[in-house]
Image (cartoon, rainbow, N blue to C red; front, side):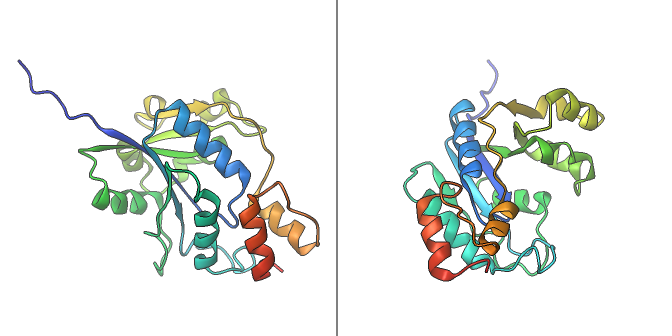
Length: 208
């Protein structure tokens, strides 16, 4: 009789700037959690994304707080600060190594939750082959992208077909950059972000 492999708990994780977090992020996370039976979803705001100051006008602590507020009433959503405070950009391979320190891969199975647009660029990621060995992907539908187009762009990466799972979600055309632009133009962002995030942005005068 063979030795049974231990059951691995499924953990979803979302990395990014969350600048700010918006309802599109939350819809994707919740649909992924439900569809793939994830025990939890970790939101991991990056600390030093390597973008220009014009694109990143606020400190990571503000972005971390907005994520905390947005998910505070969801028992299976958690925020992680493992990237906050790093002085250099943290790539997906680095985040996975940090995750393994708290959630050993012998006990946990990782699912990176992102959009089709990000997955289509997978071949340009740092250590993309190794990333594919360490995590599976949940690719949420995005306007202008099809499964066929994405597969055509990544199919030469070993193991990618088995590791990338496509997920149809309501297509909310919301972006953090559009939200920032609306704030600067003094236009409303109500219903684009959770109410608590809307209030926090106004109280702190963010993105003005």
